[in-house]
Length: 398
Image 1 (tube, rainbow, N blue to C red):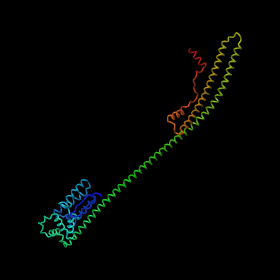
Image 2 (cartoon, rainbow, N blue to C red):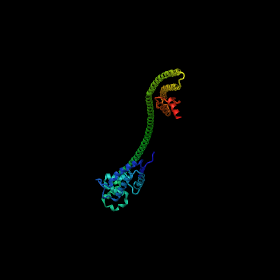
Image 3 (tube, rainbow, N blue to C red):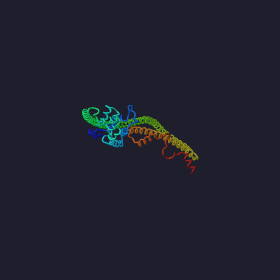
Image 4 (cartoon, one colour):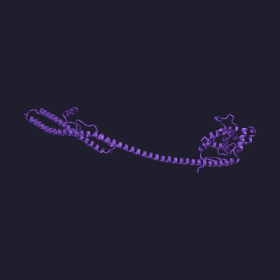
């Protein structure tokens, strides 16, 4: 069982027990409305001729209303002080409807009138200060009614009814206290249930959020991986398509250079056969000319002319032969280069098919594939051409 928030002790009766501040606030405002006839007229206006005692009651109720509505810790301390100063048990107490005096005043109000009830209220709070008001009939009647409830009804009946009413009010008070206690217990159970429900909802929401985040992360990771694979496949496909044309190009170029190489090989072989025949015929002709000279003829000019002619013919033949060989070698080198490029491109496509090729290897392969292509006569290392012009230039220099 939870501890009560407030307890109002009643003389000779069970106390009023309030389990929460809300219960006490509701009860206080009900009491305030039940006793406001002490200082209000029938129109609900404040009485200008309100006696000082009732003005004190009015201020006590008004101040208590402000304190009761203050829900702070300081307001709670002020409420405790206000209770000790004004509720039953203190010298300047307020009558409440559940107390014997409060019921007596309310009974006078209902059966006789408000004026007499006001006098009774004042008299019951300060009975020793009324000697000077004894001449006023209303005052006297109110005092008598307050002092002797039997003046309203027969004494025996009044006592019996008063006792029954006291017992009834005690039972009602106990029932009210029990209702307040049950109400507070119900509120506590509802608050506890609400906390448990909030905890369950929070855990479910957190679990759902975690599961949702995991699903979103998995979907994002899977999507990114799929997009990366698609992009990689697209890049490989584009690269293969881009390099498929160079493969065909270099194969075709290699075939063209191979045909030209075979043609120049035949030309070279035929040329050197013809050159050998020409040189042999020229030598034979020179020998015939020299041998046909008569005895005694100066042969030196003939030797010089014949030797010069043979040298010029030989130089021209070898120079042309060297040029033909260079053309044949150029076609040979171009064919080999084109074939190498085609093979390297195919090897690059095969190595890059699974995307496992390193960037450095890819850069080296692409640089080799797309290096500048040679064309024209390929220069080869060797001694300089031997010709008449070169020999004459060396002789003149010396």
